[in-house]
Every structure is written in structure tokens, then in C-alpha cells.
Image 1: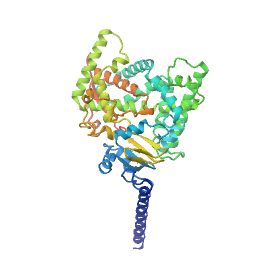
Image 2: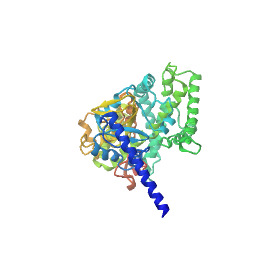
Image 3: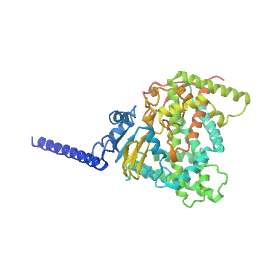
Image 4: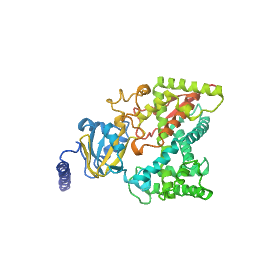
Length: 474
């Protein structure tokens, strides 16, 4: 009986302390910011609403966290996630302001484990002139016809090698296949490394590295973060060896890869460590974003026969022309396919490869009557904008035709972010997806396995998208 009484009193006191804490915090915020803060709740002490946010993120409806609060508080609301009070925006205009603001207003903010893994010199974290310089150099190289031609040749080579091994009586795991292809293509563009023993070693270390991106920020032997940091050290060592070899043999004035581009820059800040760190960070799209884009496109086409038929007809026409001319397709041929591009655009809208960005306010900022206090984080959520029925008719319906007369420059569509930190590889992602889809639909017919079709993809597809394929007779 005494034990029950002690437990009851303890629980009562704990609840009282939590309620007092929340009430006092609420009064302090109202007093300090004079009710300019958006409505919302900061959740539990210390953990805030992080648990619900993460749990929704890995469900079939990741946007449910946002939708629930948006219905109660409006498009912009306050919360507390990942250890920081946060203003969450599902408003396209507010997101546009955040994306286009410079480093005097907002700076990147990420969970502590991610910050530790990326390092202080990562392009994702640095600000000011150095960030603009690196972003500009890489962006210009990624837009060059020279690199697009190289990416096209490499994609065609690796896609054909991959598809030549597909068997009609065995499931093909699309996400696994596209990961191999995209990683090889991107690493070649970054450091001119061809498939082989070094590539396999790099891939092994990279898998260990990315497994800790969202781990607990505890850097002790045996923890996921510690293992990821050790893997990154091995990768940095490999990349530095390549950088040193390039320096010793003479820096190529006509860059063949991103390392050449950065080595050609005369800035003293462009150190070998900075180059190596950023090369590794730029490998992430080859493992994650681009393969997910190709996998989701396959999924949505599997569920929309009309779109698949029109895409196939368009690509078969291009293949017929290619066969008559007898020449390989170039990058502009793939990007000139209008319906293929609308399929990719609709996949980007529905799939939301990048769900949003986190920033920290360096001063009090007021946007559309909403205050973002200095020191608070702000989460610009793209997913909720892309799936808002006020922006798109039937937003959960895969409808590539909606883009035939729609402006992609609208602030309602930001699949690659925006502003000074717009993803420099957006054109290459489209190109790689276009090449994969062309070869897929012109060589195979397929049906998805039952467990591959889900109500809606998770933030990062845990399903590998198995399909059964049948080759098209020439």
C-alpha cells in the first residue's frame, strides 16, 4: 500500500511540475513576443514534439504531423523538434522568403549527429562568400555540356549492364539496381573513379557513413555515430589520396570531375580537407535522392496504366528514330521528351525527395505577421505545400498531365529547394531519371509485386520495389 502511495504522489508531483513548466513557458513567450508568435504547442519538456514528428515521418503519411496542426493552428505554427523551439511553415510564400534570405537572416540548422558527420567545412553548413563560391563552381560544372555528355554515356553503359542481368523468372529490386547505377555515375563525376576494388571499398565505407546520419548524437565506441565517423575518416583518406595524385601529376585545366574544378580555384580556403569533406557529402544523392526518384517513378507508373502507355509510346518513337539513324542518343534527346519530363516532375511533387529545410534565425524575423524569434529554428516544409489541395487538384493522384500547362517556377513547387542553396544537381537528376525510364520502358514490360504497392511512400522508401519483368521482343 505504501509503495502505491509513493508512486501516486511521485506521478502527481511530476505532472504538476510539467504543467507548471509549460504554463510558465507559455506566459514567458506571450509576454516577451506580445502574441506575435504563431499558435501551436511546444510539447513536452526537453523532447518537445520530436517523437510524434519522427513517428509520422516514417509512416505512410509523413505529412500527417503537419496536417493535424495546420487544421488547428493554421499554415504556420510553433513546435519543438530536435531539441529546439521551431516555427514550422507549410505556407508557400513564407517558404519562399526563407529560401531566398541570405546568411545575415537565416543559417542552416541540422540535428547534432548530422552536423558532426558533415563537418564544419561542409557546403551544407558553411555560409557567406565561401559557400557561394563552392556552390557556383559546382553548379556551373554540373550544367556544362561536357559533364552532361559524360553522365549520359555512363548512365547508358551502367543501365545496359544492369538490365542485361535481369531475369524474367526472378524479381528485380528497382531501388537496389538504381542505387548501384546512380552511385557509379556520380562517383565518376566527382573523382573520376571507375568500378573496381576501390569503388567497392568506397561504397562499403559510404554505407557505414550514411547509416549514422540521423543517429543519436553520442560519439562513443560502439555507437552508430562513432562507426559512421570512423567510416568517413577512411573515405576522406581515399579521396585525399586522389587529390594528392592530381596535384602531383599537374592539375587538369579542363576539369574532368568536381575535384579538378575545386583544385583549379585559387582561394586559400579551398583546402584538401575541405574538398574531401564536400566530395563525400555530394555522394549522398547517388545513394539516396536519385535512386528514390527513379524508384518512385516506377511505382507511380505501375499504378497509372494511362501514363505508362503514353510514356512508352513517346520513348519507343525516340528509339525507332535512333535505330534508323544508327547513332547513340545524346543528353538533349532524353530531355526533349515532353511527357517523360512531366512524369518526372509529378514524381518529384508527390514523392517529395527533399521534404523540407531547416534554418536558424540570426535575428527576429517577421513574415506575413508571423514572428520567428532570434535563435529559433524554422522548418520550411515542402511536402505539405506539394500535397495541399488548395495548390493542386486531387494532390494524392498521380497526374503528369497537370504539368502540361502549369508553371514550374511557382513557389508552390520547390522539389530541389531554392535561393542560394538550390540543389546544383537538379538537371542531372532529371537527366539520369530520363535515361533510366527510356531504357526501362523500351526494353521491358513489368508488373509490381503486391508488397511493392503501398498507400503512400515513406520519407525514405524502406521497400525495395520488386517488379517482375518481361523483355520486349525487338
